[in-house]
View 1: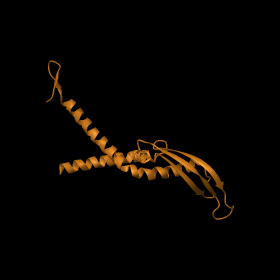
View 2: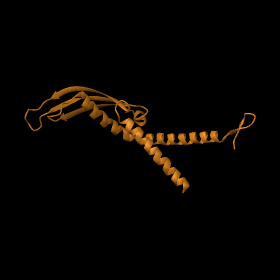
View 3: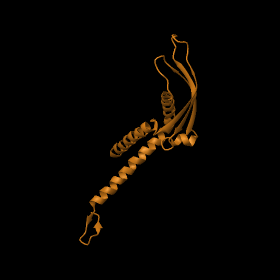
View 4: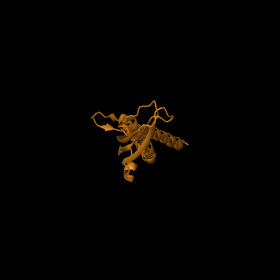
Length: 153
């Protein structure tokens, strides 16, 4: 029972670390960088129910090789995406909004392929921290002898 509780604690800690890595992966600048090239902007008829702007273009998204390791192994480290987005009549389109929407969409899609790797990274960190605590605990238990040497109790 004690082993099961210990394994579940490790798994929960690894899931928490995986979640932190996942949040880093879907944030622009840390997990990915995107570049947008707008090729055309079409403004429908004013006053029509679908007035606004339709934007065509291309977005290049470069994924962080540490956080998207499996994507890079698969050859999807850099993703090119042709898009056509509609913006409502009261929303002013900008390349920054397009970059944010398309980049986060691609990063979220690719992040699901990388969740097993991120979990293994979290599990490795949990085991490394446990080993570090064991080393520190052993160092604290050692006491100096009269001649200056150390021995374990």
